[in-house]
Image (cartoon, rainbow, N blue to C red; front, side):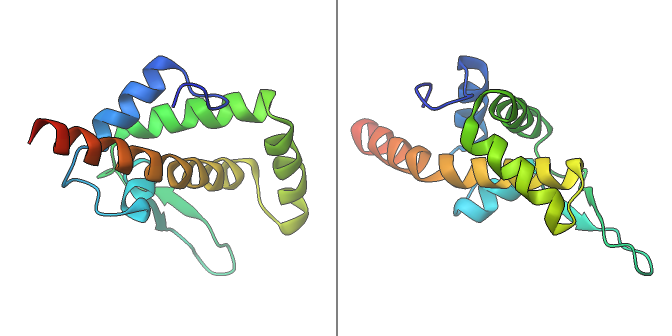
Length: 121
């Protein structure tokens, strides 16, 4: 996991800790655990706010990964440059990136956890 761009040992450890077996049923649940948005729209304004019931430590780790990728990864930089044309502000872009990162990490964490459970069980 550490070989992936933007993921350091602390962020990887937090992702593994937050992805304990039984806690996250699928990749969408894992994505929502750290970047759990709630609709907070009013009138014509469409926005989201962070749900306080989410995993704050996972949110912090995924934010760190997102910011690092925004700074260093050319693919992510192209994505960030394209999104304002679609009407997204920087907070919404970061939230979308965090969900994308969680969905990227989920399959590798699922296979690693099932191997660990099979080896110990």
